[in-house]
Image 1: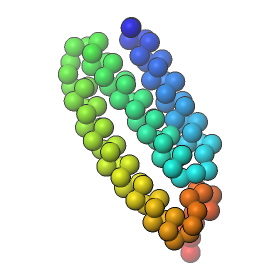
Image 2: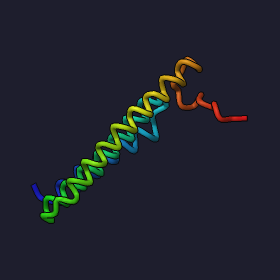
Image 3: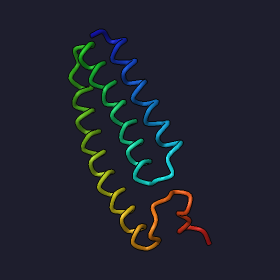
Length: 99
């Protein structure tokens, strides 16, 4: 595959993730959309690292994956706590910080 094919794949995955973030009302669906967007960035890192012959992009992608795992754990923990308090994970009904 050419670099252009990887960039197009990455743009498509990013667009699907962005669409998921903007259209979902469910907090878990929003988190999944964010994950898709981060995976699209990782595809770009690895593709450019491969075609430039520099392993720094692949190392950076591994660090990004590690940070993403931590983000998922914290995000799901927050969603569970909010569900226990509010009995819903609908993003439109989450107004815990309003005064």
